[in-house]
Structures are given as structure tokens and as C-alpha cells.
Length: 297
Image 1: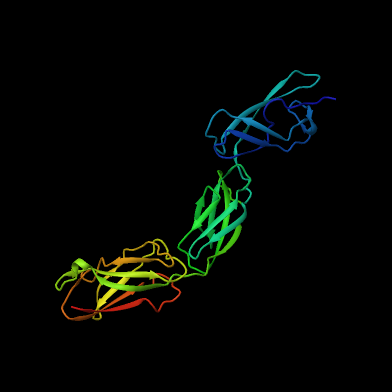
Image 2: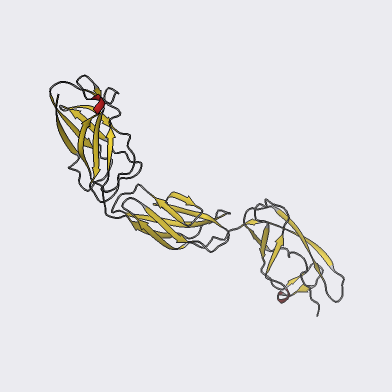
């Protein structure tokens, strides 16, 4: 019985899948009994189901034409070569999703960790919430800060490869700890070197966090100052964390007249300081932000 066999590269009609810019192509063919151009037949059991084609150049692109050839041998005829060509098609196979997602939380942050997708071609991971991408990472962790305490945050994680394919989504809900800062003003002072009558004095306050969570890095801890019921200055440049049980000294930097100072006047005056005056920070108690000082000059 006459038979043919493949000795070089591919048979025409093979489906080629290649990741963009990959130097090695993997061809997957569906083999069956077929008639060759000269009337001979080849048999499926004589053919491999997967072949590799090596290409010396870089920068392979989908839809590039690739040339190859094969020969046919049997008992009756000498080898014959039949040229074939095929187009590279993009890798359309979605990567496997990540797994074993865990979350570590504080009152204002979430750190997600996961086991990487087993696919070798994975380039990274997209993290989204409510259909909006909030992060893209190449590793297996993602951190988000400036969150609200005691709040459930849903996350959707997908792996992606170099060809732009996305894995099936993996969902995770992480709940931040129920803990809040609580800011109070424990002291009000004039700047010592600017405390005489007639001085333009910057005002100072000691702000303590008596809650059980820190303030968020980047969130302004603001204080407004009034003297005898009239706003004279404010502080709005402190954006650092105040840990639970810690404090910060804040100094006025601006005011209604652009100076950030109060001109010390003779007599008795009531100084008032209100921390978090515009409610930038969610606190466990919102009614203890005011402190007063009676000043005699």
C-alpha cells in the first residue's frame, strides 16, 4: 500500500496560533485522510498533531505570510516538494485566571494577593471595580489606600497576555476594618516670638488622634481659627498620617487676608480652633472638634 509522510514543516490548511512577537510558532493541525495533488493519499496515523516552526527573525506579527514546504515519498515515486503558505493568526486563547485570592485590610487600605495564572504567556493582571479599571500590575499583589473604614469593596481580577486576551474574571470582596480616627484640639497657642501686642502672630494647635485608626496619608488635616467670633486664619497644609494615640502640631499658613496671622491686640479675647472644619475625615465622633482659649493681653 502506498503512503506519504510529512518530512518538513507543515501541511497546508494548518491553523497557526502565535503570540505577538514570539520567535517560535506552534502549529496545530486537524489531520484526516486526504488526497495529495498527485493522486496519492496520506494517513492520519502517519502524521503528528502538533509541530513547531522556528523562525530566525524577530517581530513576528499576526497576518504575516509565512512560507514552508513538505515532500511526499512512497514506493513508486521520488520525493516531490509542494510549496505551501499560511498566515499567522493572533493567539486567541484566553489565559487561565489567577486563583487563591486573599486580602489583608486595615481601616483604610486593602492589599490583595493571589496565585499567578499558570499560563507562560501571561503579561499581568487587571483589577477593576464596578466595571472600571483601578489597577494594572505585573506581579501578584495589588494595594489600594484612602478607603473608608467598615466598608465592603468588591474587586474583579483578570489575567491578560501579550496578545490582549483576558481570562475569566475572579471576584473578591474585601471589607475594611471598622475603626476610625477621632481628632481633638488639646492646646492653642500664639507663636512665642510673635506674642506681643501689635505682633502679627501665627497660631499653633496641638491636634491629637484619640480614635483607634490613623488618618489617611494625603488627606488634609485642616484647622480654622477665629478670634472673638471672626475667622482670622487657618492651617490646610498638613497631609500626613496621624496614628491612633499620636498628635501633630499645626501652624496657620493662610487666612482671609492671605497672611495666615492674627494681629495681637490688647484686652481679653476668645480664641477658637476647629479641627477638620470642612469634614474631610470620617471620625468616630464628630462633636468634639472644637477647642477654646481665653487670652488676656
